[in-house]
Amino acid sequence: MTRLERKMAELAAAGKKGLIVYVTAGAPDEETSVRAIVEAAKAGADVIEFGLPFSDPMADGPVIQAAAVKALRGGMNSARELELLKEIRKQTDVPIVGMGYANPIHHYGYGKFVRDFKAAGMDGVIVPDMPHEESAELREIAAKEDFHVVEFVAPGTSPERMRETCADAKGFIYCVSNNGVTGEKKIDYAPIGRVCETARAFTKTPLAVGFGIGSPEAAVAAAAHADAVIVGSAVVRRLLDGKFDEAIRFIRSLRAALDAMQK
Image (cartoon, rainbow, N blue to C red):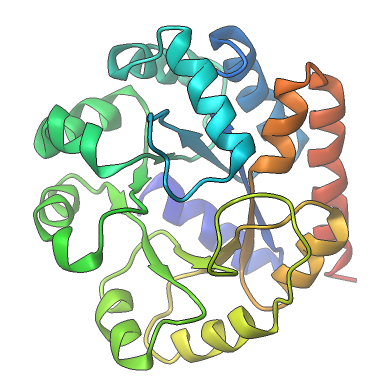
């Protein structure tokens, strides 16, 4: 059992909802991003989504796009990402899943990427612009290394497609709450709730809802349909604004709201 699988199993056994927090590597700067990840774990984040900055982050809204630009202008690249991961691993054992795009990973080389980033402390990767049909090579390499390639479902995903994408999914499945991009917004979680219900017929892998979660109330609404929630822009916005302590307090408030669902 991998570090990520172990954490998700622990949450299920305890009847707790998981909290996955996104932080962009190198934004607003390298030191702050490392510190934010370490403190997020202490504040109750069960898993960290480690953003790998890219110049064309097509799944991301303005906040995370701004963070990616800032990180890239600061010199962030694959070599620096590996160094940040190694530094983070000196301070926390929290599961870490990368969130990056196909172009840099393909350029780096699938096998080298999996081996190097796993060695540095990463447990898997999310590649939103790599459809299931095009990820077979990466998934095959990753499976041999016990490295997760996270699959997606969305409001428009058909049961037939879920059967295919969820069949061998491990770690967790990313359930995209709406057809837009990342960012804080008011979301009706009923459609993704129905998708989650259908997906459970094809997999026992935990389901995590992301996109749009900007408050404890929204986290609870999303978690009602899934095993975990993913929160990114609301945290990254505070970090970019220089409100580090507020970002950590916000994570604590999400943890408290999710824990209250057990009562």
